[in-house]
Image 1 (cartoon, rainbow, N blue to C red):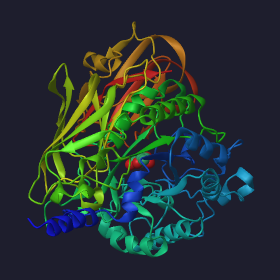
Image 2: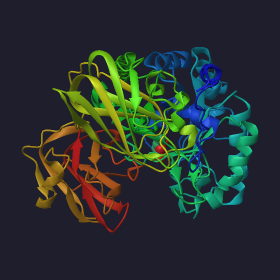
Image 3: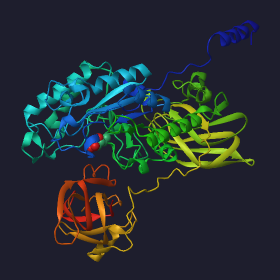
Image 4: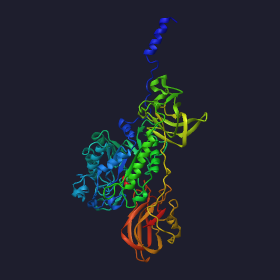
Amino acid sequence: MNKHILTSILISALVWPAFSANPPKPCGAVPTPQQVDWLRMEWYGFVHFGLNTYTGREWGYGDEDPKQFNPSEFDASAIAATFKKAGMTGMIYTAKHHDGWCAWPSSSTKHNIKKAAWKKGKGDVVKEFAKACKKHGIKFGVYISPWDRNCADYGNKGYLRVYYKQIQELLTQYGPVFEIWFDGANGGDGYYGGARERRNIGNASDYYDFPQIVKNIRRMQPDCIIWGAGQHGDVKWGGSEKGHVKYPCWNVIKKDTPDERWISLEGDTPINRAGWFWHSNQASKVKSPEHLMQVYLDSVGRGANLILNLAPDKTGRLDAADVESLLTFGKMRKALLAKDYALGAKASANTVRGNDPAFGADKLTDGDIESYWCPNDGENTGSIEIQLPTPATFDVVRVREQIRLGQRVSAFSIDAFIDGQWQEIDGAGQTIGNQVLRKLDAPVTTDRVRLNIKASRACPCISELSLLRMPDTSGSLAEEYVFAYNADKKNWDVSPAAASAAFDNNPDSFWQGGKDEAIVVDMKKTIKVSSFSYLPRQDGKLQNMTDSFEFATSTDGKNWKTIKGEFSNLRANPIELTVELPAPTDARYFRFTPTRALEGNGASAAEINVK
Ligand code: FUL
């Protein structure tokens, strides 16, 4: 070859990049920039605080006296500061729950904070929380229940005007709202302006006209993420109120069809097993920091977000045990994420898009969430090897996909080079999305790790791989069952005898009987009873799950004092619920009568306690 030609080839090779590939085309639905920003928020707090805080109910009926709301020590700034300290990125406040009571001076209804004893009716909880979040640098969002058990017009068009007004007030008077939450619970019995009846709204999307609501929200606050809204919004429920999101976790609906849409998932759960609102038996029911870590791994670690509820008590303060668990979990999470052993490590792949370094394997270890490794179009698998400078010990592997190009990967595995050979340390990876946190069975020490993409809807686009170490934890990550209280049941006579499964201190066994079939218990001695608790069947089935009751006490087994009530929200959250009696009463006998089931005509109970 002529010397000059050779020189010019060499020069141009230095000046011009040898290979320059085009980025891949998006695959399926892609998230909006707002949805991406939202996923990067990872986790934030929920605050359930309203009239239910004062009545001990999970679902207010709509007839509660608004005067009761009177927190003597409410300090929104202290609550927001706690959230921030834990590492949470935002707060969503129940501005209106199903009882219809508005925690701001709304012009849409008289059932609002203006009638509260607190600040002589001049207070505004929404305003205080919005201001506090701003002060502490976390985002603010609102929960506004579509179902309204107070409004006389609920179920007809008149209510819609009320509801739209409420949304408008919340989105125009309190600054930026990062997320608006439309609860899925809808219709049923309620006060409804005194009608005290059951109302059915049929198809929720049609009744509320969610498509129109979504349009209005986009106009008022284009950056606001919309939860629910009959899948017309941006985010949907993770599927259980335990916070776990199912895996594989696809952030799209109508997947692989021309109508595919990006909708992310959010896991939601209260930090306290007593419920979403504060209850007097709170103290023993707080979830452990280790369990919260498991919930985090099962939500954020599956490619969703997590919203964790803390409930202020009657004084307006957070429960001390709840805060301690929250902050300890917050520290554990920070420790987990503090050191990425793969950061800056060398990486190589068996294939790189157009051999262009812009899509090279080292994009996985550059700490830049936007850059990514990618093979050629048509290559839906690939392997990337990470070479650490020195061996490291880790037990969590985080992998991220470049979601701006759609969610692609459906199967992957991870290998480590141990004792001179490659060994699979995780063979069960499926979806990735914004991020997956794969907890290994045991810590692994190695200086070579391999990520194998085994199936993808189009060429995979992987932005990060991190090797993390779970901080030392004393407790197990599994959830332990704790009853609200344990009565001494040794000598009790239970009739019918089959109902003893509801008095055996075993949350997994349960009694099944007929609707209206009373269980009568002779405690053999008279005690003061101030409340009772009911744990619904825990096997995941709703059939014959009792959700309404009569409960009676007696000193002689002949004359009874009876109350009636409902166990709310069992469909989504079948937890143990406690019911306070109007006043403590002497009782040797009590009688539990199931009067309605969520589904079917029977009855059931896993455990009943009195205190
Ligand atoms: C549920 C509601 O019914 C609960 O009361 C709670 O607000 C929870 C976050 O959503 O569906």
